[in-house]
Image (cartoon, rainbow over all chains, first blue to last red; front, top):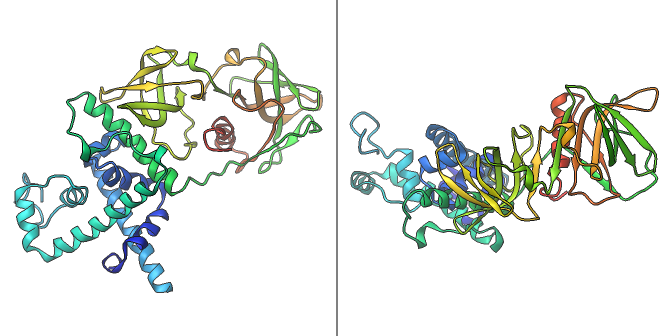
Length: 72
Length: 319
């Protein structure tokens, strides 16, 4: 998995390329350090949707890192 | 590994545990014990830790003005409802960090300004050949028709029907009244929100200015300096407004439009030079005499509404 080999600077760069909905949920979970129910409350979506967005955000992040790694 | 369901699910840590751990929140004793002896979960935890570090690094690199007003690690949780209010305010600020600090949404609405005073009375709208645009200063409202004084000095009569989309925006703080359903976008400030944009009523569905997380609720205790926002979960969040707060009323009536404000109308031109409007928007925050050319994706009502939404929020989205 690309995330296992990525440097922090590369991860930051990949986060910048995420779609807004993914950046938003990551920001609330890790920037504001809200719990999953709190993120769900703020975004007015179910906790399950928060989890799926987080998982999708990480998948997208890994894919971006993987593509960048292959292009180097 | 949720402690209440560990017997019926995968023995590995669940996403909630991994996120909590990466966010620096407490995790259960059983989850910690499992992590200590599970290589697979350690790998997963390391991946999430790296993501969390990346997010926090970007947030730290964002401008100071966009930093959350409240930071969880430095303060003990306050009792509800204040804790909830601070959570919402902090969340708005945090999302601001992520969205403004990292980038902005790519819109499909294009607004081009010019200061020319030689614009024609009606101008073409890019993206829909059957649409014409009239803009200028609203001179008067006569029942179902409007008179716009254009930059060329020529007045244009704009007719409307019951299906014409009418909106207005500007420093319309008096339109924020008790009981109104609103969406607030702004910055976290002292456990509340310093409002940048307040949308009164049903918002433009397709338009969401970059850089803000919308917080929905109902207005309570409205005054000239702010109000309490009561969220659907019952949390009261103090909202501060100022002369710089942009108020958007997406679904207004002709009677609400104020003569003297900048106005945009999109519709079909008639043979007599009048414009049969599909959408009208007054935008009092725009400088007088400025002309804006609107573009739409296509001729659909949703595209037209999106264009009007774009011009309504133009100051907040940076033009």
